[in-house]
Image (tube, rainbow, N blue to C red; front, side, top):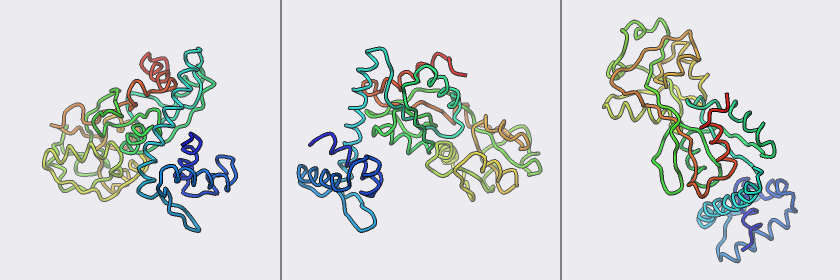
Length: 295
């Protein structure tokens, strides 16, 4: 089994298409097909189910993909570690981030990182916390900034960034706007909520808080971005339970603290692989963050 065979396999698995993968790898389609066949012979198992339009992974292919991504990540880390010993941070920084995470200004941090390490290619992907955690653990991302959604493991560790309490946002003329200085979760049992999809960290934290208090909650409108959530609340189509700093993003909305939920409902973290698997670029980014050298 050769390293390039694993690189070819991962490319086809990502694109689900031999022609597109060959174009991305800048190899001939016949050469790519031969590489995959060689890998299948070595493993004595078919890795893809081929059709005229696309390819899908077999069970063996899905099992190999997890390990292949991890091996390729380790190889990249080895190359970058050697460059770091020589005093230069090179390679690619693959960063994931949820929207509007507290404790880090992603754009400013990346700008500071680029000024200090111009030879590193930066790739940023925005996604929900569950997917980000899986991608860091699998080696598809070097690190991610997200709301905590799972416990640490052998493949994933977390560095706390910030913690916030829960705040309710509603239209200024909504009855809850005049309910008093604070609300209890039970006061919201009959409300229609606007919220993120379940893969996003704030949604999972909110669901867990309401479930822990044994208070039912109805989410009628699901979105994938903060501004759509705020737009829907501003049109009085529902209320939203969100991290406290969201209230500053739309001053026209009424914000009410939620009592009895604690001060750390929404915990934001940096998700990283184990220290020995953390790339030099990821370590350099975290150093900037921890020193507060980014705006």
